[in-house]
Image (cartoon, rainbow, N blue to C red):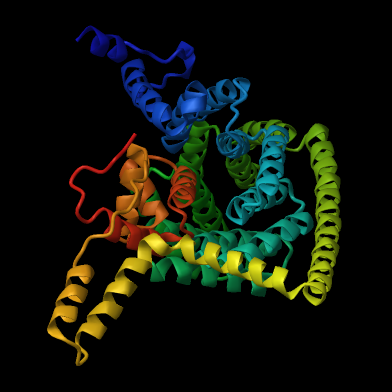
Amino acid sequence: MSLLLTILLIIADIPQELYSSYCDKHVIDSVYNECRRMAAEDYPADADAGADYCLADWAYGVSLLDLSAYSLEKALEKEPSDMILRADCLSLASAVARLKGNLSAAIKYAEECLIIDRRNGNDEYISSSLNNIAGLYMTHGDAVTARKYIDEAIGLERKLGRRAYLAIRYGVASEIYLKLGETAHALEFADAALQLDSIDCRWDKVAVRRSQKAGVLMELGQDDQARKELEMAVPIFRDGNNLNSLAISLAQLGEIAFNAGDIMAAEIAYEECIEVCMNTGNKYIESRARKDLWQMYRENNKDKGLLHLERYVDLQNQLTGDKTLELMQDFNVRYDTLKKEQTIALQKNRLIYLSIVLLLFIALAASGAFLAVFKNKAAKAMEEKNALLVKSNLDKDRLLAIAKAQIPKEITDEILSIASSTEAIPAIKLTRREMQIAELCAKGMISKEIADRLGISQRTVETHKNHIYKKLGINNTVELMQYIQKVFADQTHPNTQ
């Protein structure tokens, strides 16, 4: 009992000013306790940093950007040894800094995250980092550079075949190509993204795609159609507490109303947009709304217009300082250099591979016996890889087929006895979290659904799945489903650690 009380009394060391009126200290302390429990299991080597990251992820989800930024700073100061955890922290820190209008910090975090992802060679994480950096360049106004990053991300996602993520890349591409003035391509990307999310019934994402499509329609002068798209999207954003997308859509509705001469409707939309932005710290969208209000008021209410203009200028100075431009240019150079180095490394690897092939060919000509031994070993290694999953069933099927032939009864009985025996399979130790994820995978759930069910990030789910694959000696979710059905079907209490 005393141990339980001690655990319950653990509280988050957070400055008072980071608590909001609708999320008091009691709530955050409760969340922090749960984060510590999750981190102890998911990041045993970096439990403290993991707890800070989990709290930051939660705070970001409920739009407490200052709390999220504070928790991420604490996590990164602890220098986690788990590179995937560090990359997760950097990726989230970049997203928070972007919403707070600190582009220099956002680019710094995104740059470090991309470097880690490239070193790990994980195309899924590389695609995510490329998408984030493309968005940062687009925010700054450098759509040409943004297109380079988003095009590479789209290429990776088409190869990976992940439709949900491809829809996200298409959505960002729509915004980038719109800024480049290529409205036809922008509309194609917006429609493609909307179609992918609609097919898979991702209604919260469908609302985002409608907002992105509305931006293209507005540029094409189709304000009425754009307004219809936004009116379908805004209620979904409100219900889902997607404040960032809500602010963008309100700014769009304000612009449409202003263009139509409906000053009252425009003022209502812009003022609500500014209120949402100030609550979440989204300086980029707030600056856009302030600029439009200044243009709306400058003729009829100069004093009010001047206040919005002053705020707009102040926000722009924060968003587009010289330091930010310098950092982005520096990273762009380093990014190109890194890609060239990787190309050279790949060429070297090809040369090494060709040399090995040549040596093997010479060895083949010199010693056929050696090659035969080598091939036998390679074949044996390949056979053992999936033996636990398929060998037993295949052997039994063959024995049962033989038993049906015209052979003496005593031989048939012996064959049936062997076929009905149970093959002993070595126990594989999985953690409790890995076991949960394995069982959910066996039920046909995708990573996003598992993340929502367990209350963890999708990236954490992918990490656990990779660990499971390594432990079980399998390659994908299909083999995992087969393994669960085969190995754990008769085990009432799985062996966990």
